[in-house]
Image (cartoon, rainbow, N blue to C red; front, top):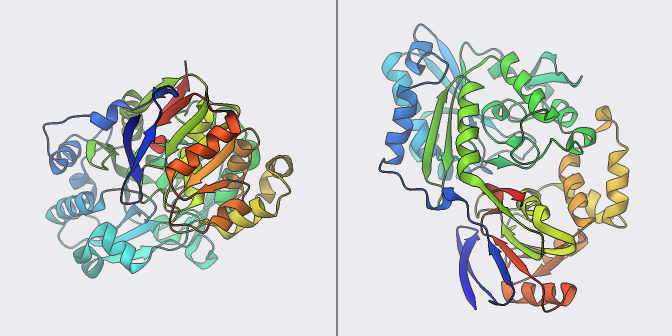
Length: 426
């Protein structure tokens, strides 16, 4: 038996795989990337050498106020490292500038105070002015343009009226935007609900270019770029992370050019390739991304690439926060089967997109061709089963169930961190 430790919640889960069945283990170069620099040094060096932009210090000079956009509780951005560095540099250059920190919650629920302390540290939460974006609150939004796709661009009023707007975040493969980071801090990060839904419409989600690692001719990405430029996102600090969520790369400067450099880095170190298997095992990289089924769909798309039709995807994710979206859950659970749901969604026009539609569309696409088993001891099994998936409390039971479905000789591919891998077929 081959033994592996894969990410699960805030730790790891040990799994055993029969040698005769194990076909491939796909680990990106980022997992074992070594650097001689401390995380803080990597960030400082990036800020000392901005890409396509004036330095942060030059940008803040003479400004009375500014807004820093940061990620919410669902993203493993190491803000305890990055935010203090940003704040220190800004205040050294302009001690009297008024700084507001805006949490890019997108369409997610608001970040709690406890989650803020966990993410930013108690000192920042106590001393800084932090606002959580609410995409459904029209009074907090301002229309600033029309997206290339035709949807109205509504963004947070604080950001729209900011004298200087910058953002911090991280870059990883994204299952329909190509990559996270950069322009995503605006759309969907601080955009209005109707703007998010127009951008995440079924037509775009169904586009073959709206996939992991793809930016060229990706209609979702093109809308996001327009939103960032229209919002005047002047500067970004984005990092790349290893399997332990440690910083291995940082990219600062122009919101498009610096992001492109970061995407090049991620493409180089996060790419893996394999051939189709009967069983594909994957994860969502542990907490915070594995905290609900909604987010776990991202890791499932990695398994989707290499799972044969009617094969099994074993998704190891705590889902400690349940389904992660009421509309997401209700649409999937109320459908007769995934095929019915997928056919219905594909008929929905751009302007009639409903909350969480993009997520249940992708899940339905996966479930229409593959069986999914979620391994967790932290989620109500009924939620999982209601959503046309199988539940296993531990990995051993999941593997037994998978062999029942595909046969005892089924070949296995393991992708230890699906959410941080750009998976391609050989």
